[in-house]
Length: 166
Image (cartoon, rainbow, N blue to C red; front, side, top):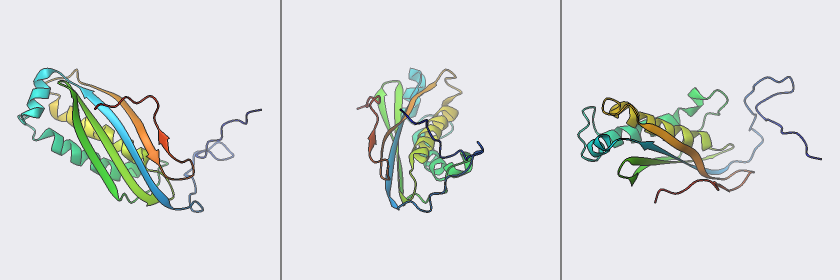
């Protein structure tokens, strides 16, 4: 007989709580998140040629993604405060009109960095949208997902559904 799912963020009374990780072992934790933004050709060409009036889109979006990853605990109520030892935001063109992002986060801690990687990828893509929306209000942010994570008791995870952009 299968036992019902137990959510660690819910106490016995059914109330939300931050999980106590003080007894967990510290280990190296790494997570990679992915996402895409689809845009028209004019926007894609303007990003590639660095002619967007608001500035160099990919540099600003990269820094925004890093900043967001560092502030995840302020935006997601039950996330722990983590000292990231690495946060890298990398953009690639999947097609002429689809820009992808990978956000890799790393720490040595008692809990994982998946939410930080996902936050970094999302905010990087939202920053691209914000800087380019005057040229294309139909841009679509899609396929945001956790690609891989390692460290901790649950071990190594690789998404079965993620399709690489390379």
